[in-house]
Image (tube, rainbow, N blue to C red; front, side, top):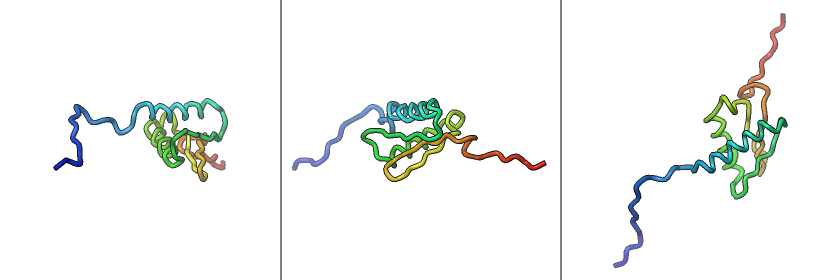
Amino acid sequence: MAKIYKITPVDELPGRRSRTQESIYTEALDDALKSGSRFVRIDVSGRKPASIAAALKDAISRDPRRYGRLGVHRRGDQVFVERRETARGRRTEKKAA
């Protein structure tokens, strides 16, 4: 009887996410910071908006010192990165004297 499956020996497990894909999102975040705009739209060909938003949020959480001032928003099929005034969107309020 013929087997319906195939077994292939491998030396190592492949990484979950390639470094190339990670660099796409960190590069996009760097460009968003350099743009000077408060809001920028991010489009990545071949990726769904939910995947783009999740990858951007993951990149921000991996390097909060660098990207902590950025936030990710999804509106329908569009993904936006917002440059916030302070880290993680917390605005400091001036205390009344």
